[in-house]
Each structure stands twice: as structure tokens, then as C-alpha cells.
Image 1 (tube, helix red, strand yellow):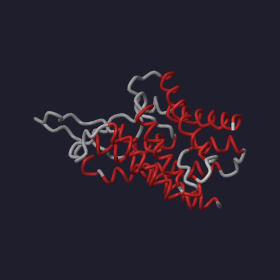
Image 2 (cartoon, helix red, strand yellow):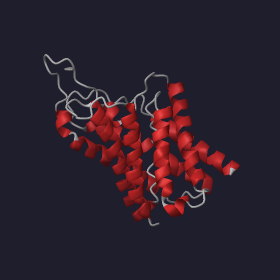
Image 3 (spheres, helix red, strand yellow):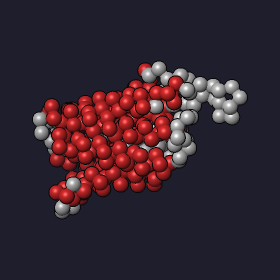
Image 4 (cartoon, one colour):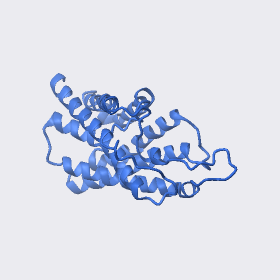
Amino acid sequence: MSNGHIFVGEVIGTAILILFGAGVCAAVTLRHSKARSAGWIVIAFGWGFGVLAGAYTAAPLSGGQLNPAVTLGIAVDTGKWGQVWVYLLGQFVGAMLGAVLAYLVYLAQFQANVREEGAEDGEPLPTLGIFSTIPEIRNPVANLITEIIATMALVLPVLAFGLTKGLGESGGTVLIVSLLVVGIGLSLGGPTGYAINPARDLGPRIVHTFLPIPNKGTSDWGYAWIPVAGPLLGGTLAGLLYHAAF
């Protein structure tokens, strides 16, 4: 795969991933959305479908990695580092693009994020959770451990799926990974919101900082290192474990 194909594929695929993921968070969070308060299960499946759509779309161009932790895990296992930077660049650009697209889809709802006098839910809504992760209990050590383990639970199976005869030829790998992401969200997402992808968290957080969202609240840069460092560590450990055990 050429650098150009990898970059374009990862930009498009990651943008689709974030469009679906940030989109479902906006749908569940924002007032005047028909899906408001639909709940965590809807969010988990929305992100899973985002992986499905993004990875299938990007697969012919780049393989559809869409996640620096996955890219890092593959590189640690195979020792092939030459195109890692292209994957990472495409993923971060795509994540920012996807966040902007999700904002545009819900533009009217974001603009309505103002205090409505007399309404029971009239307080402005914080919007960072639509774009990036926020821990339920702010404990840096615990939050970091959660992200490391959850990312290992993603990357190790992704690497092992390559050993499953017929999955790659049938195209079923992407579907299985999408269901895996849903499962991680349902089982391991409660403490931190399961970033498990540095681009997924950092790219939209940057976009949130600059978007003209009324009453948008903080972008919480004090926490931002955890959903970057945790997945990168988790991806590295998964790559090392896979290389040693399989």
C-alpha cells in the first residue's frame, strides 16, 4: 500500500468512525434530539457501527486500522515501522474531520444549547462528552489502568483474528471487530467512557476547543493525556504479548 492510499484511507475511515460515534453521543445527549436519553446501549452500538462503516470503507486503501493503538500493536508485533507515521497522521486528521461533520449534523441542537428560562432542563449542557471521554470518577491511576486493560482487550483479539482461518478472506474480520468494540463499551466502558483510541479522543477534543458551541464548557485538557497514554500503552503491551505467545 502506498503512503497516499494509506493516508486517504485512514482519513476517510476514521472520519466515518467519529461521525457515527460523536453523532450517537450527540443524539443521546443534546436537547431537541429525537434520540435524547436513549442510553448507554445505544451509544455502544453506535460506536460499533461506526467501526463497521469506517473500517469496511477504508479497508481497500489502508486496511482500515483507524486507531493508533492498533497500528502500534501491529508494528510492535511485526517490526514494520516505516509507514506507522502515515497511519497516525491519517487517523488524527480523520478524527478531527469526523468531529466537525458530527457538529454540522447537529448544528441546530448545538446552537440551542442555551439556558431556557422556565424549562425543567433549561441549564446549558456540557458538550465535551459528545466529542471526548470523561471519567466517572477522576482518579488518574485507576483511569489509566482502565484504558490500558480495555485497549489490550481490543488490540490482542484484533491481532489474533489474523490467525483465524477464513476470516480475512470472507471479510468477516471487520464485523467481528465491530462487535468486539460494542462488547468493550458494554463491559469495560463504564469507568472512563472507553477511549481505547488516542485519535478518537484527542482529535475531537482539539475540535471541541475551537468550535463555536454556545456554553460548551471546558475541554478538560488536564485529563487529556490519559486517553492518549493509556491506549498507546495498552496497544504496545498487546503487541508484545501477542508476539511472545502466538
